[in-house]
Image (cartoon, rainbow, N blue to C red; front, side, top):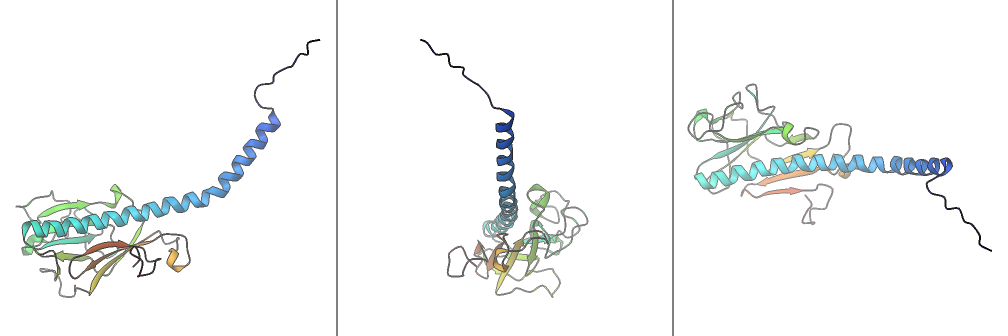
Length: 210
């Protein structure tokens, strides 16, 4: 005698509701982790942009055999000003008194027209969600690639033993070094002109630590 078997395809309403509940629970558990990953990615993007700008300034100084400055600014328009917390930057030739791009960051790049901008970067191009704290807003390199005193600027701008630029998340985040979850970064420039990005949460003995 042949038995008939009925094959059932699809899901019942109860099975679908259970699956959706499990999926919702997994998403709720994963959301904080995803938020931290996104924030850390934005911090690293900002730190890499600053590192790239510094490396460009140093390379151009060596190539041109003259002083080139990396200048952190509040914006890249006609109202730009020096800012140690600015997430924008301008790289320019610093050979004359008219080589300061302050108040003229909207100028087109040019080797022959003041303020002699080589390249500029707006945080809007990358990540504007990071906060910056620099030991000084201007870093200059000479033809040997070494960090030097910045000419044609206020005498109060001095050169520390090593220039540091800390890149953190928004004010609502806490860096891992202070017990939080944000992986904040730091860009350092030595007097010899060495540029490196490091993690303050790691020990100084670690190759990636500060």
